[in-house]
Amino acid sequence: MSTAHDIDTTHDPYSLVIERLRDFGSKPGSGQDHECPTHPDENASLGVTRGRGGRVLIHCQAGCPPETVLKALGLTWADISGNYRRGRRSKSSAPAKGVPVGGGIVDLGVDIDNATEPGERRLRVVKGNPPVRTRPTPERDGEIKAPVVKTTNWAYVDENNVRLFGVKRLDHEDGSKTITQTGVRDASGKYVKPKEARSVLYRLPELLAAIDAGLPIVLVEGEKCVDALRPLEAEGGFLATTMRQGAGKDKWLDSYTETLSGAARVTVWADRDAPGLRHAAHVRGELRDAGVPTVRVVVSATTNRKDDAVDHLAAGYSLEDVVELDDAALEALIVEYGAESKPDKIWPSPNAPFEVAHEFIDRRYRSDTGVQLLVRWRGDFYEWVRTNWKPIPSDSLRAQIYDSLRHAKFYGAEDVLPWNPTSSKVTQVLDALAGACYLAADDVQPPFWIDGPNG
Image (cartoon, rainbow, N blue to C red; front, side, top):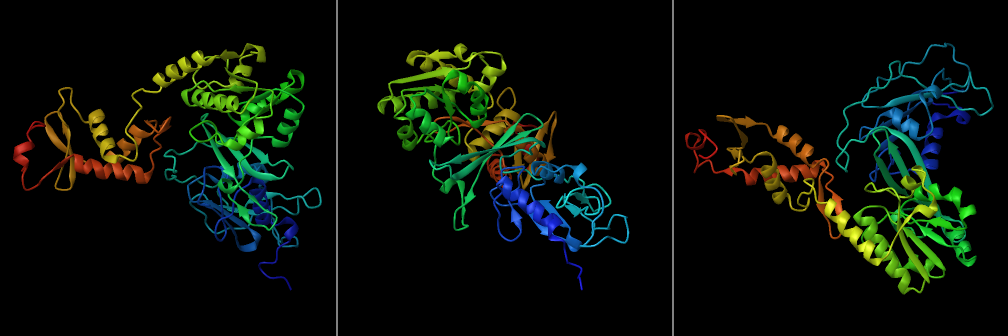
């Protein structure tokens, strides 16, 4: 006798979603949670649970739309239509009524009756109404990401072609990108986090073979650049490689130098920005010290900031058109791009919220004559508006802080870094702002200062 939970596992939607998540490289968390495939997720915020009648419920706590999650897993709304039954034909062809679903949860079933091939899996939405996107909460990087339009995965392997970790790139609808790393399970089934995995250069087995064959090596910044150069390798007689995490402080490892030390010629293709050029200068010095006979640094013939090999080739330039930089030209370009990275977007570090609060006041609540136009008295903020002080809600100030810091940057140890406002960072700034604007209630009475910002 079958029960309410007897499921034809050949067409089990829950198993299908879990399988897709596993193939995608999403790390499982505690219970039934997994890493969401559509945003940087170290906390396994995607809930995947089996519902009644064999359905599966999918819900991202960060607010990612369910259609975006499905798209990242290689599923479309066209795939999720039809009827579901538990191991035998349903008596009714009408869609089953699911429990009302909110907060971006999708209730999925399987269309067994309309499958055209044995084992074919077809998903449908059981809930009568399409899922509604709820207002998401800010992610850890401080911005709500636009929907994902393309997902690309790259695998880093050891000398024996055994996978060590992966790199996942999400291209968003607004042109932005998100890059994360994915771990693997070892032979014992234990999950190995990316940061615990051995770091190697991309395409290591092919790279070692190319070095043994005496081929020139082209070191670029990012797997996407490698993909752009791969079609040209056979004709050009070279091999392109890269490393994880891109350019930056302490990202070039001694093991990378050791791997390339046997190469006869290495070309470091730098991005056209200060971090990329500094990285190229560091790598060039390391490889020269390791005895590599020829080490060149080049940049794209295109001259826009951050241009790389992809931009160079997309503009129609050939490999012969790259711009080679000698030591003096490289240092001059580092200075040039470094100077460009000091616009009004530069703010104090997130680690100094009180300084950030004062910067916020100076930028938004300071008159041309230097008078501060924001104060806090008896637990409330007040702003000077033309002729008098008016209360301003803390939520309004919080929104202004987010807006001010959304595209802000700050100086790190060596590079200019994105400020990346988050809820906790903004709260720290708001608390510091209360101190920076404080007026003692016992010392200052309304008649003294309510008439004007000068008191």
